[in-house]
Image 1 (cartoon, rainbow, N blue to C red):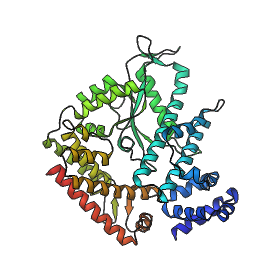
Image 2: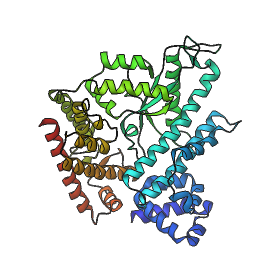
Image 3: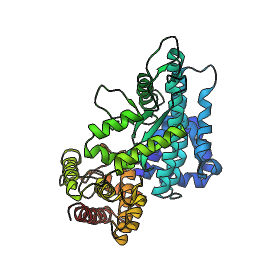
Image 4: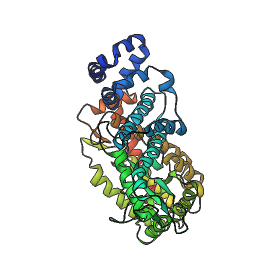
Length: 441
């Protein structure tokens, strides 16, 4: 019923403008696909209503079914830089290009053409292409006003973007934030008539980047940017040199901050600086093995997250922060990485599934349990993706009394609401048991 309601909304809102009826008459496969997509996600319905011109692209199999490489996605973003366009026009164009590409990615996932892993990899590649274009847009007015940053010898001071969380682990889905921070090479100053130091230049660039990608415009949002995990205290700016990065974590960083760096990945920027930054991050995370006794602090942080962010009740579960949720798997993996990663490089993986495989090879976790947790983590990610595509608010929250459990059950292929809820309880109970054995045992 909900699928038909969404389809009727789409037809009523876009049919006359986009010639949807004519398209569907000519292409029965498109009709079936649209019905499935309407059942699997309000997000796509809203996107198509907002941009009915995208409907025609769905009738082109080559356009929709082919997975695009990072290079092709970046080339698609090149259309932003047409001479004579204003910054506002470029921001809107950035959002429209991203949304058109996201439509194809989600279409493939909802129709079962790609798995949750493939969907996340494609969303991450799209995010990186969008990020690359946004980084250029963010710096353009700064370079025009201040020039480019240079060191005392006159050499250009480059920067790199470090992805954390799901961006770092290549596990993004629709609606994910981009957790990131920026590192630049050396101290210095810009070479324009109005000079500022390199730290301030890149801090301004990061602040602008968050707006370029995350501000709500007439064309919507590209990607929300989350800078809360950046190194440094409030007021210290949004970028750090390699030296300042190391100094902060060594002198002031808490264990939870070191833990977040297990997922750090260099996603954009100068290659030589990326190698330096990667080496610094590895020293900070894996330079000294964490004693198992120190895991008590990680357990306490996890319990606080469950209470304050999960807020589960008898009528509500939280797929990310709740009991046996995504964070249970992630915290278990990251805790074991901090304990064993110093001696076992194979455990130093940003993606959760890859890290579990590496930990199993290192003897830090039973291989059968690692494989089991990978599959349970995939289940939870599929639930999370379904909730986001179906428009659950807050995201990752499942209200048991409303229609959402039945809609998620249908999206994931379960015969009934109860069958899905039974599976969810079994999966989360098994995850919680593994988490408690791993971090407390």
